[in-house]
Structure formats: C-alpha cells, structure tokens
Image (cartoon, rainbow over all chains, first blue to last red; front, side):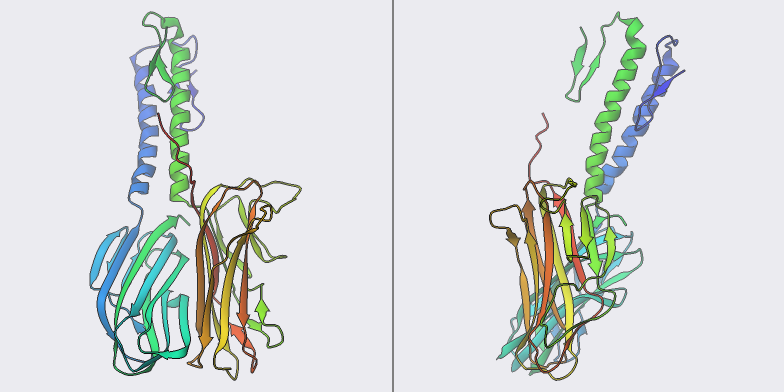
Length: 181
Length: 217
C-alpha cells in the first residue's frame, strides 16, 4: 500500500512493494503536480495586478471637484487602465496612490483637494486649506488601501477654491494588489 | 555512499542498493514536499500581504468642549493576519502582544506601512483658520523611546465648504521583542461649533516583508 507526502500528496512505495517503472511514473507525476502548484503561485507573484497612469497638463477650473483624466498609461497588468482611472479585474486588497497639484499661477488659491473613489464613493481624500492665500497650490498626495471586487472602478479627482484662471494640473495615479480577499 | 544532488537536501542512493529504493523514494518525496511547501508558503505570503483595515461606519462628533477623538474607528473591514488585531477598549491596532501580556502573540519582524484618513466638516459656524488634524502614532512600549513613527496631517479650515480630508501615512520597521501598537488622534480646534467626522474613514496597516535578506546557497 503506497504512502503519500503530507502537503502535496506525492505517492511513494512502501517497504515490501514491488518497484517497477509505473511506481516511478506515479512518483514523477506527483512531483510534477506539486511543481505546477508552485508554478501557479510563482506566476501570480510575478504578475501581480498593478498599474500606473499619468497626465501632464489637465486644465481645471475653480470650484467643484473635477474628474482627473489620464492620457498616458505607464503600465497596467491585471487591472484595466483607462482615461478615467482603473478597473479592478480580480477582487482583493489594493494599495492606491494619487499625486496631483499645480505649479502654474492663478489669482488666489484658498484650498485644494484630491481624492479617489471606489465604485463612485470617495474613500480617501485630502484637502489643504491655507491660512494665507496662495497663487499656486503645489502637489498633494493621497494614499490608502481599499477592499475592491472585480468590476469596480477606481477614479480620481482634484479641486480647488479661490479665484482666477484655470490651473494646469499634472497628476499620476498608481495601484497595486497586496492581498487576496 | 549516497550522492548529494543540488542544495535542497536531495540525494540519490548507491546504484546497487535496490532494497532501499522504496525507503529512498519516501524520503525523496518528503524532502521535495517540504522544499516546495516552504517555497509555496513564501509565495503565498507575498500574494497575501498581512493587512488590517478599519473604518468608521457611522459619523462621529468632536465637541467644542473635547477637541480630540481617539476612538473614531468601529469596524474591522478586513484582517487576513494572525498577528494584527484591533483592541476597541484602548482604540489601537495591536501588532503582536501588548507589553507584559500574559499570552504572547508572535508577530512578523520587518517593514510595515500604516495610515489613516478622515474627513471633517464643522456642524455650524467655522472659525477661519481653525485646524483639522490627524495623527497616526506607532509605538513599541518596550523601547526606551517608545514612539517609532508619528505622521501628522493638518488642514487650516478657511470656510471653503468643509469636507476637510486629512491623511497620514508612514513606513516603519519593527524588530523589537515585544509587540507594537498604532493609535490615532483626530483633532478639531473649531470653537464656534462641533465638528463631524464623516462616516467612511479608514485606518490600516500592512506588512511589507522582512528586512533581512535570506541567502540561498
């Protein structure tokens, strides 16, 4: 009666059994199956869902939060990258980051904010209101983890209050899966 | 004399040692099983980074008479770790054990990231320039200087519609013998009205990996 290894169940002969080529074939098949299991995990590790998108100059008017639109995809693996952000393809825990801001001057900036949403709901937001008027806001970072399911969209926004001409806003957003659900 | 093969503890028997073939195959299979299991464990660790996420399911109020909230989060959204938890009695993420705890929870030494984000709006009049502040504090009580990291974010409310989002995030290394804890402090210095912390904030911590390199011969 054969025995089996504890984790992968590789079949081996026990003392007293007849050793013939089929025993070796069964053994090798068991090893092959175990290797395939590790290969699957290894491939998943090498292909972790991740992406990065950016925009160099989006014109944003004073007032309401404005959806950020991306024209360049730096890379996207296991997530869909599009102008409006990312779409989750496999459920999991994701680390998301956004950097947005402006160095072009306008009349005054009393506050500026950036956020990102999961399936249309704002999940992480940062707003900087200043004690003194600025003419340009500089960059703002937003980073956080979300529990996302396949098909959900991750979208990004920037907004500012004050007065003057539109700000020219460069931005970059990234996403990477850190765990299964 | 068995011949060693490679560096995973595998070997082949003497060519004429036929009686030992069954025993050899059992031992070989067990060694392969063990070596692959170790690799799979490491891969699964990478694929399932230990992470804990909390949220506040309901809004909280910071009173003008009590400017600090340390108990914002009420729900564990996700926790796939065996060594991180949230203690609602002291409002802290615990990594490992509290100093002096009767039962020790082993935790992963290495690099972590943690952060929090809340959004605040005054319920009434705004003191222009009043602060909305968030601090995340990582401590190991066993250290001579317990504070390991303490990022802070602050917005000075200029009465521009509220929804002042503050976000603090940090990376740190844990290598002590005791556990660590992560606290949060949310402050509003508005004195003309209370301040609402909107529902849907987040507090999180994730283990990024060991900081020591394991050399494979």
